[in-house]
Image 1 (spheres, rainbow, N blue to C red):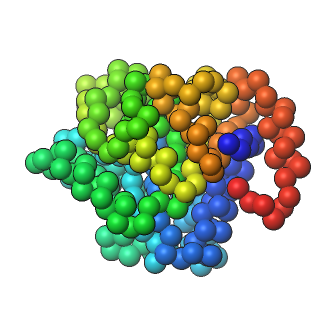
Image 2 (cartoon, helix red, strand yellow):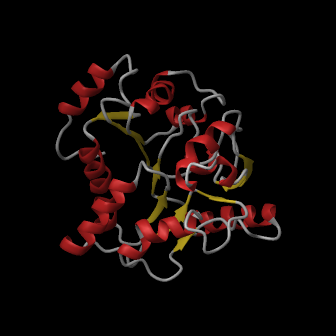
Image 3 (cartoon, rainbow, N blue to C red):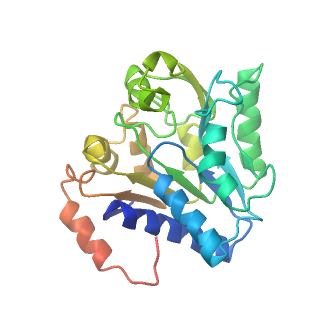
Length: 260
């Protein structure tokens, strides 16, 4: 696991660099897209590069991490609509190139199985963007999630609903109680994981992710077992890291050609 500590704007550029390098060398790459606040600056940077530098997404495909259950198709916080607004409509993805789990399916288990099969059918995800919750969840794999889990329905914790209430006019009663989410094993199948976290509120989760034991109590810790995982954090999110000085030293000494 590589840990990079830098200001938030720089982290977004580092993540965008990794995606651009992938797309320019492999235009038909499969990207994993996350929602929440963590990847927004990355999407802004990718959109800028598309407009100003000609970065193309026309041959790429993308899969979303998760989706709320039961939100109306036109609801602004439905994750399919969020991804459309924040990145898909701002670049040149082909129609239907971006897929997400169907939170309004009549048969939710069947929809989860179909989504899992679609990811496999696309050849798997090449680079997966991730954020992390204050309780250590990635996607909607809440504490206690099986480390071997695949795409499935999950009940959101009170903490997650409180954290997400800001997207629903600070009204927790408007936050759905259930979601469909890629499982931890599904996420771990991606070839490169890139997680972003900023702010002091994420410091304990980042500490557990990087330096704690692998445990279902902190689901993101499964990333310690991944052969190519990158954690991008600002100073505040890194404030609990015991080896922060070492992480800074190793990144400063990294060869320019190596990339993430």
